[in-house]
Length: 377
Image 1: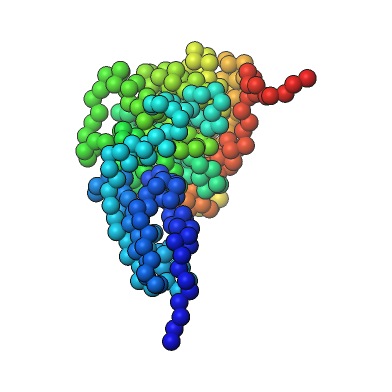
Image 2: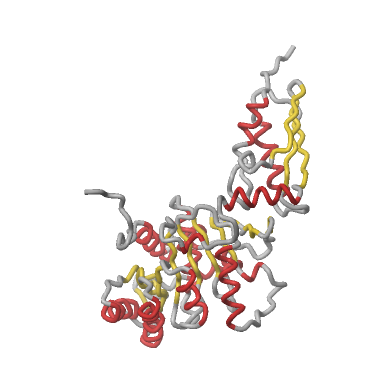
């Protein structure tokens, strides 16, 4: 006669602690999502709370719960019942996630914030700013950092498509927005709140309010890095970001051609008015590697270095050229497929160049100016 190992509630809850809520990124046990645990001999039945009725991740949560329970030594039948949190439970969850703060605040505006914020800017459209954003974010996430993307390009939003999350629904828990997590990166965009490809027809104050809400009302968790994909130019959004997140560093994206470099220089000099630091310049579409091993410089050469040199002169700060990314069809293909090229084809020339830039940004040290080091004489 077969014998079963004794199943304990402690063992069941320990197994459930390995299941994370896909939208929050924390264990369901920590989020008080375990409604009940019932053990009958070797059989285990659990009740799990979902944040909202019709939760888009219900199948994922149920499947993951069932999987960890079926791994228990000697377990028999496993049953999972799904319930929906009450308004009071959602409010309690929101308070747990927000911590001690009493209302929406912008965590990245805190001078002591450990999150590095990079605002990715360009002087003109079409230089690959959004592609650089998603690939840098995915590269850093793969290197072990906790990363987020805020799509601040309200009119020209493209992050959901590039991240493969166009069809992912956004969950709201007690006025707290849960951003989708794709490729290990949390990301939010106005594109996730509009039907189809409907245009956004807003005036300036609405843009400011949207950025503010994305910064304060979205559950970002403990991010190491937040990328903000800015619209081209030096308009309302660039000024708003500088005001709301004054410690954000600018990354300027340009192409090698002189016309693009000249316009990119203008985008960088906004830092003189906003007192923002420029982390560096990325030159995209630097050259097309041909089958015979030679490189065709379709858009010319030297634009990225020229922008870096000019911004160094104008700002009296060292502005490095972070790297040059070649004109590579795999970069476009990855964007169209919703999988960044650093994940889809990590050995491609573009992916290797972007990985190098991500590694440089990853180790960049924050300035200690004005910070209390806690050192006493």
